[in-house]
Image (cartoon, rainbow, N blue to C red):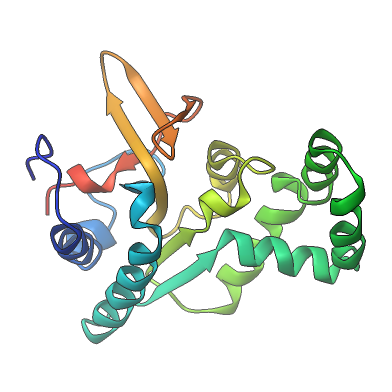
Amino acid sequence: MNMKAPISRKERLEHVLNAITSPRFLDMQGYNEVPFFICDYPASDGLAINEDREDIIKRAGHAGVRVLDLNLYDLCVEILDERDVLDQVLEAEAELGKSELLELLQNVLDPSEHLIPKIAEKIKEADHDVIFLSGVGEIYPYIRSHNVLNNLQSTAKHVPTVMFFPGTYTHALATGASLDLFGLLHDDKYYRAFNLMTYEV
């Protein structure tokens, strides 16, 4: 796929669907690293991508491909609720400054201690061929996407995992990898994922 020109919403939807239902993708052929992919999209397409993701999941299901759809924000709320701290966090939000609230959320939602085990729990509960991760923008800045991916390597390595990323992901041998959330916030600490939009079907 030629990525020099911006692709349309429909082109992105069809490319993702064709990629995740291809035997080569599902058999994890053609790459030696962990089976992680980034599907980047303009942050302005946030609402549209949710609709498209649901469409992809439904159409993939018709093709016999089961998708485990995990929203990171929903998982974080679930964790806070299960730990009986959701109400406390909501009350503290009005009283704490931004930095104190950030520290509080980072502690109670630590990826390695809480979020990844929750994802592992969801993985065990449902049969699936592909994992979708969304909600990246909603959990920023208390959880960073590269922290999720780094910690997830030991848990989600048996099937391909696609993270829907509101921003841009570039990966080149000369310049390395760059995750730019919302197209504005530069975060280049993750190097092992593949760009799904340049994946050849």
